[in-house]
Image 1 (cartoon, rainbow, N blue to C red):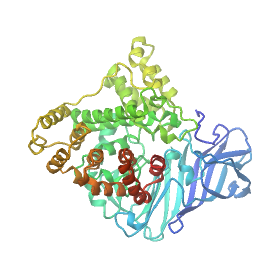
Image 2 (cartoon, one colour):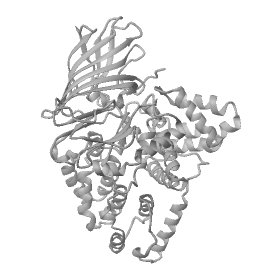
Image 3 (cartoon, one colour):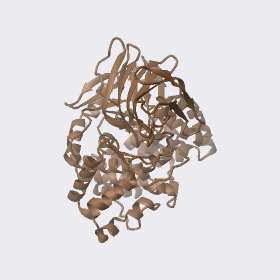
Length: 591
């Protein structure tokens, strides 16, 4: 079942790719990939052309059949967001299409890092980020989450570097620099991923391990030592892991997201290396994607909540299984705070606060907000409360089993919900309130905000400080990073230099090794002109590329003329370190 995808030129109901054989060379000197993408295709209607998505690619030749018979091709009208359609002439009996191409040095999915931008400072580094519609900037491909392909790849890289993909991976360098990959399970194009660098591998468990630069591997191995436990906890809730191995790749700090759930090899930001395993819920989130997103995929970007709402819900269940309900409750409250902030920013009546989106004519990145993640999660929690956890888990297990290795749509899920869970029960249907959650902006009127006993104690401590108890005398022993984050978020917007200095002296926020805590603290230091944090702020903004941190901090800076001047100066220096996913947003913000 394929629904029309407004973010792809492909016409899969006519002719669709089913398997890709990719053969590319990685040229660091010119910052290009070159080679060929050979597709097995199914010509469903006997059409005379197949359509692929491209953006900024140089298409050199096209061929049909195993004997590589040259064929004609043409590029369509460029679109600022979508790129250009590539029309390749085929015959009714064509089963194979090969496209010879090269990428542009400006390809948005590719980030080429010089040695100074890496942890080791010795070798260059490359990584891709294909979500949402950037796979088309490094491969001519039918770039829709509703189309799934298997793939194999041969990648040539400099001999001193290791290549890894979202596929079966090597664990040691090959002296010839030639690497072969295979992904036997069908995946959508946004999960196509490649990284090349001075990488080493460390095994964690029988199915798990970590790739990182040698300078980072020890810290990463410590931080993610509980990966195996997470995998066991996940399988206990939603059944067997279906992707063979689960490994992590720790990227340089310019990576624009917390993590990217590329199958078999999650790409992860080094900003979670807090030295105390306090931010590993991010790994639970990316692992959860192995079921929600990778196994069962949103068919279009208007259905993005199906990926992320399920994943946040499942992430919190994994954390509850490992660390208890009190721990998971803290994550729910922090998530709710993020959701409230997004609702205020977008406007509670904005159509972008519905779960089912309409992003036609817009970049699908506009839909990558906390609405999909947190409102989606709270909708699923709401259903769980309505029917009980045992019944809800059985329903979700059946959903994953029914649609495994397929793409689904909001309507698909809601019809499944009606037939498998509601089953004609009018009272239950009213209680679940599909219309209010999925198609209505904001949150339903009967929504009950989550609470946390541990955060209630943080609030007591905060009130003590407000009443005059010195910061150094506050009862903060044993607090997790979540409690510290909640405390910082409770601080008033306007604070005196004395208050900021007192808190900083007692708790060392400006020198925190925890990036979540640091980013939340910087919002206060910017707002209140706390000069003692300026050097740390500049260092943070010039080394960290995670969009979640960058956008709020730059937004806070540009609220005053003096701050905007500072923001522009920092951005001029920092921009080369950021991925295109971040610079697209920040260029618009700082213009």
